[in-house]
Length: 416
Image 1 (cartoon, rainbow, N blue to C red):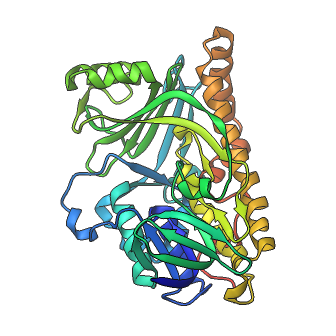
Image 2 (cartoon, rainbow, N blue to C red):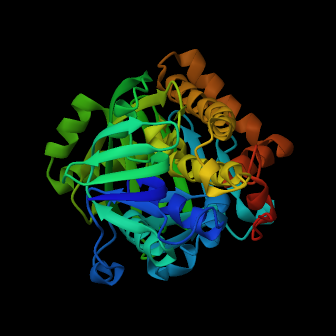
Image 3 (cartoon, one colour):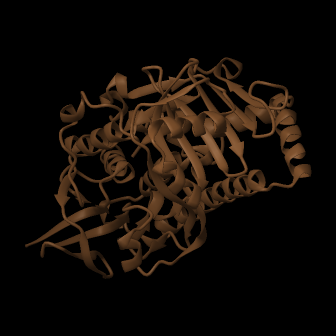
C-alpha cells in the first residue's frame, strides 16, 4: 500500500507532534495531509490521569507556552500537571544560596506572572500527540526502514512494508535519529562522561515555588518545584559516581543528596525510584537535505544545566512554520531555499546556546581555587547589574533573541 502526504514527520514525541499541530493551525496544508510516524502511540491522556508525576519533567519558557497555546495544546494540559515557578536561585558550590555571591531571578522584578512552568513529561507528550490527531494529522505506528529523495518528493519504506511519499520529510526522532543517519547527515560533539539522575523528593523546607540550582565540581544539582510541595531533582554526576549513587538504598541516597544540596531545602526524602540518563553535547553538521529537515534533538542535544533542551526544539518548530508559511502552495513546502533559510536561522541560534551551556559546564567543573573565587564573584556581579540580569532572564523566558514574528505578537498568526 502506498499513500501520499504533503508533510511526513518521523517522531511522535513533543517536538514532532507540536510541529504537526502548528503546521495545521497555520494552514500550511489541509487536514489529512500530514503524517506522523510513531514507534509507539500514546494511550488516551485520561488513562494516566491518576498516576504519580512522571520522572521526566520539562521547564518550559514563556515562548514555549505561547507556542503551545497557538497549537491548541496548552489548553488541554491538566492543571495538576503544570506548575508555575516564580523564582530561580543559582549559586556556586563554594558560595551560599540567596547570598550576595548567588544569583536570584524573581518574576516580580521582571513584571511577569512567573518565570516559566514545570510540566510533567508524560502528560505533555500524550496531549501533544492527541492534539495533533485532533487537528487533522494522520498517526501511523511504524518506523522508517529506507528512504529515497526524488525531485518532487521523498519516498519512504516503512518497517511494516508500507510505502509513503511526502513533499517534505521532517526528522524529529530524537538524538539517536535513524532518519538523520538515512539522510547521511553526520554529527559532532562529545560525551560528558556524566549521567543525570532524576527523582522526586520531599523536603523538610518548602520550595517556595523556586527552582534551586547549585553548581558543584561533579556537575549541577537542580531542585524543580512540583505542585504538591515536592521537588523534582536533576543531579548531574560522573558516570562512576552515578552508578554508586543508584546502588544506594533510599535513605543513603537521600543523605548524599542532602549533603550535595548544601541543606538548601533541609532534609530530603525520596518518594520515587531514581532513574538516570547519559549526557552529551551533540549537533548535526547540517540541518537540511533536499526535501528533508531536522528538528529538536535530532538536530541538537545539549547539557540540561539550563533546562533549555525542549525550549530550543519548540523554537525550531516555530521557525520552520514561519519559514514554510512563505510557501505559496503545498508543492513548495520542500523547496530547498526555504529549508536553507530555516537552517541558517536555527543552526546559529542553537550552536550559540549549546556552546554557552558547554562552556558553563566546563567552567564550573574546573577545580582551580582561583576560578572558584572568580565564579562566586561573577554570579554576584551579574546580580548587581540590573540590565544584564534582566537581559539574561528575558532570554531564558524566550522573550528575547531572534524569535519568529508570531511569537513576538503572542497570539496572532501572520496572514497567509
